[in-house]
Image 1 (tube, helix red, strand yellow):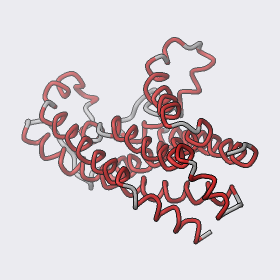
Image 2 (cartoon, one colour; image 1 turned 90 degrees about the vertical axis):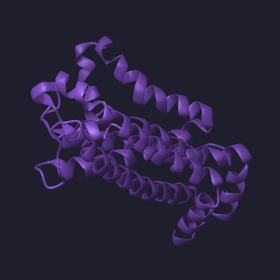
Image 3 (cartoon, rainbow, N blue to C red; image 1 turned 135 degrees about the horizontal axis):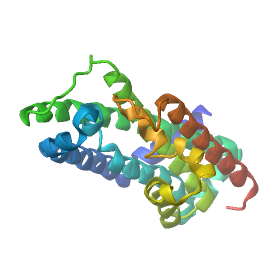
Length: 251
């Protein structure tokens, strides 16, 4: 297993696209943080007593999840597209070991990159909020550190979801379209679903799954860590399906 992990890490770090994607993650993520923080007075006026400076400075997660999702997809689909997956499986015939190594490498990269981004966004965003005359927060305030750490965990889960989708779809465009539908389209259409399906959205990405990034209680999601745990269970289900499909399907 250690050899498989080392092989996947070498493949990942030797690609220029990996570093371009991570560079884009921080450039876009921190740029969104700066822009949203410099326009925070209007948001504060609208929120009133529900103002949450921590979540406001972490809004970069909305775009960051898509960028890390692209990275997670490419870890898998780039090998299917070039035919390298056949070579990989020839060198490591145990298919579950290959996918497990990809999942572990993707999780490690995503959780480090996501956590660094969330801390950087918070530390950059809060002083900018203060300059606007808007109440801000510190890491030592109740619930703030928890919310920032939850942001990195959430981004890592999205990256793992993307890995699973990459295996199931085996095409970059198809997997990315599916991820966009899950992350952005379905939450936008949540109000159209019947009431008996509303429980599904308690752990849906950008809805219940991201509720742990807030420090102000949300009556719709009173137990945000349970919502995040539900998202984790959903991602594990997708990965389990990916393992089953990779073992049975021809490459």
